[in-house]
Image (cartoon, rainbow, N blue to C red; front, side, top):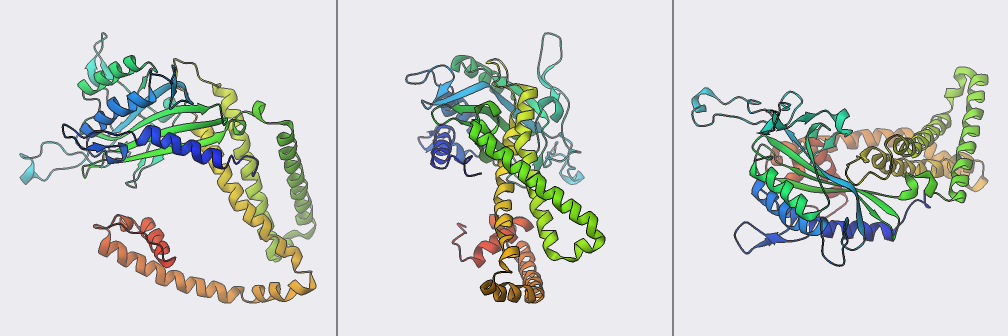
Length: 413
């Protein structure tokens, strides 16, 4: 786990990507006020950013950038994909008394409200240009939006070439024919970036939500991993040997526990430490599964993509991120298992036995604390949910109150 963490290189790599993609300024409408991607609030703002700093920076064709490169060292692999999720124009009901004022109603996204009909200018065959594709066709997973909406992997997609002039022409066609309109709920821009200097691969996802309440919610997601995490050919022999050794050791321990379970029968589960042991082993199994998933995926889909295609590496990059999360949790579990053996050390027996005897009282106290905590969360949600963004949903309220307990300066409103 420590060997797979690039540390400072990863932080600097992601910061540079954020500056290149999200912090390049543009003029806001016709005024002389300069803004960046985080300030996008309307469809017009989005088009100004997309056709302005995004094309000028990410698809740069001026020195020192070469074809496919931007910000000096970032190389785009394959094409750039644009995808949007839409809702139907009758996805909500306008009261009859106001129907003459508001002819159509566009709700928040839901499976029932998703638009799947073709739209756009007619092609030579006489059918609309933009066709809905399923999540399986696009090989895309779900996305949890900043507004709390879970968007599917389906939608209407198109790709951009890496030539700046051709990309600008494609975007002008989309803008002129209202590719983004009142039915649009979210637009995604996905592309893969490789930095050879630090051997890091990043899946860039630029998600811009257009909620039914109006406005926009721009957000930039970077999934970065060392190339050796998804390509076994890039791993050193020592790395592979260490990981194989850990796999063998864990397998031996699991086999030993299974034999012990068979011999002891149901009495095996009378010892609390056995539950903790299996939680640790299950976390190891999950980590190994997530570790191998990118290798299998890239063997099926191929790497790198051809210059004229977009291959979505969301699944293997997600697996790498979740592998890190599981390993982080399992590192705590593994070290806590030391108490199982330290209880036999004379000077540690008092501490371990005290903690064991106090476990019931600690559980009762935790339960009482949660009841009070949950009550305050409901109160804050009802009182401030419509005014303070930190209290807009119950999970967000629980998290915000936890930050308050830590005495964190959390609120800007």
